[in-house]
Length: 394
Image (cartoon, rainbow, N blue to C red; front, side, top):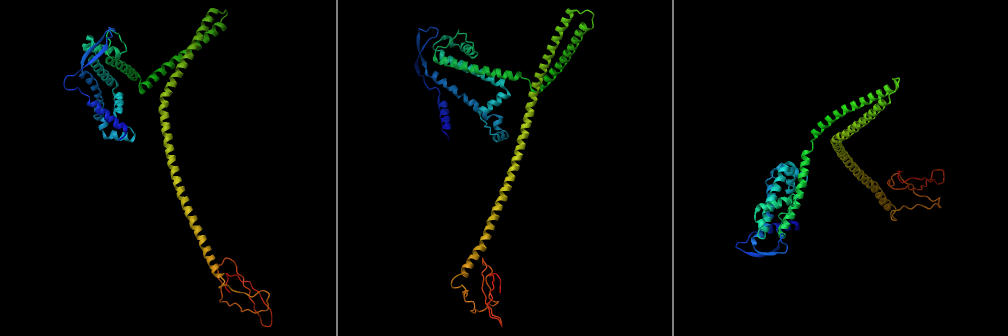
């Protein structure tokens, strides 16, 4: 548990622990009267007055009851959908849904409840010092004019407790007024279907006005031409009159075109929102598909790369194994105790025993080992040198 959770539990215990004490206990309450500021009055007031005011803080339990008995909270399917979309079903979410479904009812219940509770608490704070507040109707009148930000000033609070309640009521009244204006404006707004019908009707009317304006322009143009070119004597008064009408017809034509352009912009705004939403959804879906394809290709590339690395490692081991074995055999072959001594080159005439075919050399050596063989033929004295590679059998 976090420290915020511990603090909430402690605060809830403190609020629920406040209640009137059994018995009768009084304390001296001194205040300055607003009607007579030079008079300071002290009264013995029951301690239950100060203990009963904080008890209204328990009204938060109403929000908890609304949450626990809400259909959204008790429905398993709704909670599952909310969990998938990372939405917490708390009191704030329930109040938002209620403001969306029935905003007028919620505001009415809240304002009436605030009016009654504030009137009762103001009466408790003021009735021991001012006889005007002893009547509950006077307190309700003061709360009403404070809530509506009117403030006639005929009844005013005297104690700091009453003034604090009046200030709180004024703040809550300003907030409720703003919410009421938002709700009314949303109720008066046209729906999407109504906007489409309204745009269609306005477009039809503007089209008719545009045709009439264009016809007026053509008519005045013909009349100006008629009174200037087709008559023997030009009447300048009629010409100026038709010129004025011609200019007015052009102005009305431009105005109709401007209104038609604004209407088209509004209509495009309404339709473009849905088109943009669909386009964005298609783009996101295509990006997700391409991302999946790229992920598959990368996985296959990694698998092929891993296979190539394993093949290269095996090839490297296969290449090194014959080399090591050949070096070991060469080392054994070239040891001093196993080395073969050959006669020096200077003693050419000295006989050596010929190499028999059974004598073989190792075929796995790394370099060609040359052997010198001397042989004598009948009737000739001499030597023959033959170079024999070590990987061939004689």
